[in-house]
Image 1 (tube, rainbow, N blue to C red):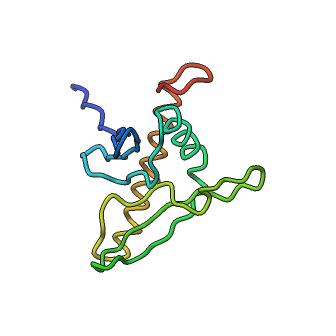
Image 2: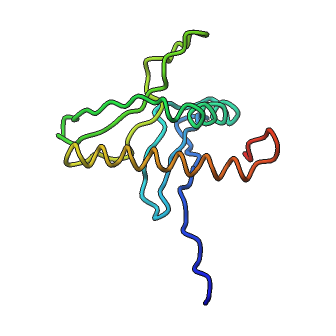
Length: 136
């Protein structure tokens, strides 16, 4: 019996912002945007450090759900507070929904898709990298 092609997993894409700033976007295997970075970074090494922290802290992320002026539901993800080192951007989200949702339950499903995408992405990166290095 012939092997089926492997399902395409989530993709992490670098996004050029205004000026020389960079961000990221997480897309599902079908191409649908799951989330975008809520912050822009000054350089690629700063972006990589932020992504590494996001993947490490993914189980501790805190989510908020709000309805915007167009009555679309959106979510934002926040890193857990750190007591060891103060961070001036501690109250800012690190990720947000890539689109608005008609209903709150759909928005919650969007968060579940984002969390699942981060888990798959972390596993792929861990197995693709060499000892002690991320493959970026």
